[in-house]
Every structure is written in C-alpha cells, then in structure tokens.
Length: 88
Image (tube, rainbow, N blue to C red; front, side):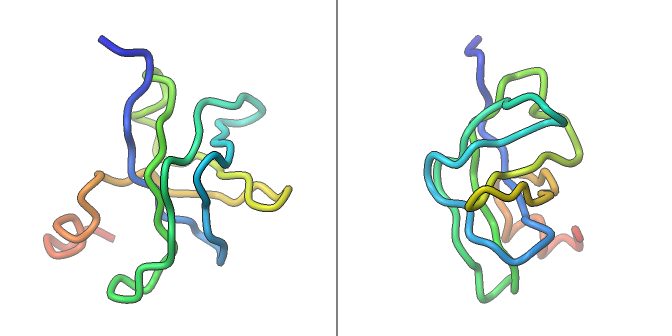
C-alpha cells in the first residue's frame, strides 16, 4: 500500500489548519494538512491530513498553525456521520 493515510482531525483550540501545514506526533513531523476550516454546524475547527501510515491510528496529533503546535484529535474522515452517531 501507500506510505500515507488520510485522517480527519478536530483541533482542540481555536485555529484553522491550512493546506500544507505540518502534522506532528511528539517531536516527529508525520504528515501535512490537505484541507481545513471552521465547521459552523459542528462548532469546531476540522481538517483532513495525510499522515505516515504508522501514525494514522494515533488518538492525538498536533498541527502547526502559525508557528504554534495545536493539539488535534484524530477522527474518522466523515465528520458529520461520526457526530450524528454520537461521537464526541
């Protein structure tokens, strides 16, 4: 298979993860954001990112936004379906 997997991210702090922003696991850069924005319906900041395969099952990663690493929860790619099923 490929060396990277697409994952969903929900930032735990206010900040928009833009295309190309680095994704981190501890002190190791493990991927990059492909797209991100604020989702009014879900009242949060979400992103999709390509991460190295060994890290796609992590529960928490970090996204570097304007020089600051913001903690991000790893979620299924289909955010809306996840939240409708009671995911938090």
